[in-house]
Every structure is written in structure tokens, then in C-alpha cells.
Image 1: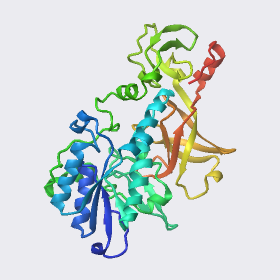
Image 2 (image 1 turned 45 degrees about the vertical axis):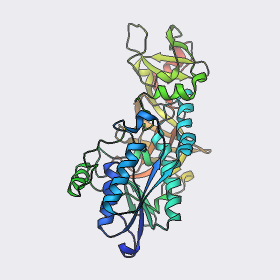
Image 3 (image 1 turned 60 degrees about the vertical axis):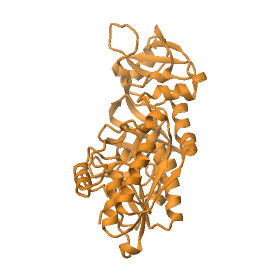
Image 4 (image 1 turned 120 degrees about the vertical axis):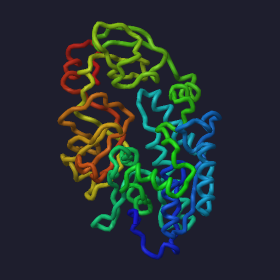
Length: 391
């Protein structure tokens, strides 16, 4: 039932549910309770920024803790709140700020899943004698022929969260379960209404949950006020076109809001943290065909060092569908070749591996992008332009 694959009678099987206070995790807890499992709800308090407590779309703050508690009371299950604010600040928020200041575009919810929600929650679930930790993520976990478990894209492609969960390890997958991975979001909401859950119509949480105003630069400037430096906006051909108040206000591929006048459409093609320069150029300069990666998490069946030239599919941002690629592992370095090219690949983003472009494909892992190499136009730029810059 719901892809649990657990032995033993439900009434003798404890499952810890990570309850964020939203409709998805609340439905998971309700379904498992209805099936007769011994359900325990855990909610993490990750931050409290005043207005964020009541802001629509926030999660893991005051209002959501209250909502999770209400659902647990209705279901008649134990519910505990764990104060992880200091861990969250150190492992997620601090890293988020430093990454932006380094000219990257980080994805903080990936770090939160790796460092907080799965690592620490799984440890607590084991301490409580649980057979599994269940979450409300839209991703599927299935038994593999070799006896382990694999991670797969969700049945609802519009809600698939596999991009954000690529960092889940083989060991963690043994204990993790994702009951919503095989159903559409519309069914989840229908079940919430059917069961009379107070959060049935609650809006979905936002990706950057700890940004009270919805403007990430406010958080960075508050956390690192001394590190936000002004600098030049420079064209690939060497011309200084204007000034900026900090590279944190720009992302690779950005076109609007550059603050410079030009006779051609210009895009941000590079952010130089050391010199505080924002490099702009034509869209063609954004093309990338080789992406270098760090911090690899590998979920494939064969050792990573044996996959040189392996055909896979990848996503270099959460909103893009997987595209065909080749995985290269040479002298300890991992890179992905994109035959069709990609535009606006940014350091700090994730590159997630899949077996194929199929909508239900298995996740093979991924890594963090560190040095996307230029496509044909950008390579030409290094020859024609005095700066010698590439995308």
C-alpha cells in the first residue's frame, strides 16, 4: 500500500511522519493512520522571523507548527516539535548566503533535505524504533531487483520533486517512504477534504521557505552586510557599461533589470566574486555543452568510476524536463556532456541524473554545478574579446 513495502502487521509497525504543517504531509499521516500503522508525527522548527510565521507559503515556522499539531490531534497520534533552528542556520542559511556571495545560485531546499530533513530526522526515527520515515514529497521509492531501493520521478510530473531529492543516499532510501509518489496532487487534496483535515485548502510552501519578504537579497544583506560590494557591469568585449550594488542582485541568464543601456539584448553570462564584476553579453554566450560537478551523490547500480561515457538524462534546473546527456568520469572528476546544449547554466545549481527522459524514470543521483564550460559562441568570445571570458 502506497509503496511502503514493509513487513509485519501495520499495528505492530511504527512509522514516523515528517509533518511540515502542509496538506501533503498531513495526508500522509492520515492515510497511514487509517491503514492501522503506529504513526508518530515529527515537526521541525527551523526558523522564526516574525512576519514569516504568518506569511502564506512559508513552512517550518510558527503557523505551520500549529497546523501540524492540529492535524495530529485530529488523527489521535503523538506529535513532537524538534528545535533545529541552529542547525538550519548553520547548514542551510549560512551556506546559502556564502554561495550567493561567491557568484553562485544555490538551491537551499536541496541542502535542507540532505543536511536536516533526512539526515537528522532519520536519526530520530531510528531512535524511536520506527520501521520507516514517511514524508509528503512527490517522488517515488521502489524496491530494486538487487534488494535495495531506488528513487523515481513522481506520477504527477507537475509536482515531481526528484530534482530536490537527488542527494538522498542509498542508506537513507532503505528507511524512507514517499506515499504520495504514485498519486496526483488533485487526489491528495481530495483525500484531505474527505478526511476533514483543516489544511485541505492550504497553499503549497515556497522553495526558499526562510525568506520572510520573498526577496532573498534582504536575507543575505542582513547576514553578510560587510560582504556585499559594488562593482562594474562589463561587456564581454571589455566595455564598462555601468555599476551595480552587489553581485547578489544578479543571476546567470538574467536579462531584465540590468540597469544598463545597450543597442542589443544583454544577459548576465558570468559573475566574478573576486573582482565584483557582472559580465554581460549576447544570449549565444550563455550556451553550455560541458558541465563540471562537485559533491556527487551516486545512486546507480554500478560504481561511479565505471560509468565513463554512460548515456543518461539530466536536469540542470528544476523547471526544465530531463534532456539526453553523457556522463563522464575521468581522473576523479565528474562532468556531463550536453549534445543539445543548454542556456543559462549557473554554478551552485544542481545537475540531476536520470536513467532516461521518461516521466517515471529512475534517479541516478547528481551533483552541484561548479564550472559550466562555454558553447560555440562563448568559446569564440574567448578568442575575439579582450577579457577572455566564457560562460
